[in-house]
Length: 190
Image (cartoon, rainbow, N blue to C red; front, side, top):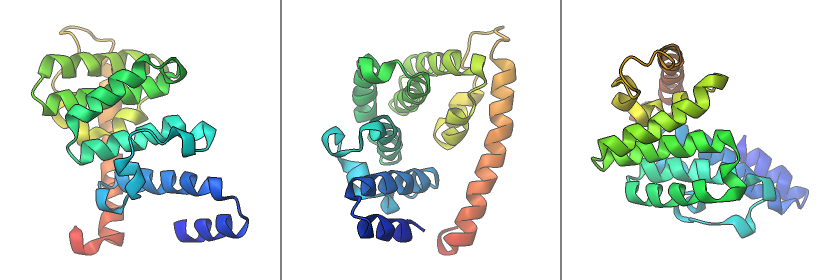
């Protein structure tokens, strides 16, 4: 389908949309954990803002951040996303803030800084759960792993309990669907 979309875009000479197709492809392969199938520029470029369709910048960073985490570039994730949270153009978007805090939490945990990881995860939960914004956690449950299940909030804080339970339920369904896709379309690697 991606090849067909690229063909239609090229035929229509709407070349600026090619990177948008790459973003979709990168998101799909990123969720499947297939770093090697993501477009190379999504894995390597840290700031392609000048060449992206104007509204795609924030989405680029969500995909790029996941690619960096899949590649084990944890310190780079912290540096990039800490800076982006200070960027007034992106910081005002709550969804972006949630993903950024999740990525920072994963990166800090992998680097052995558990207090910073928990603080970043608490910030993501504090921002997301009042609006029942579960999917950022679900989509990254493979990266968050045990961090989501080790009481990331203050002891006795029931405000997060229902949200964490719902995230766990949705994560099980999400991971089963990804496993099904992997076994159906990538059987040699399952």
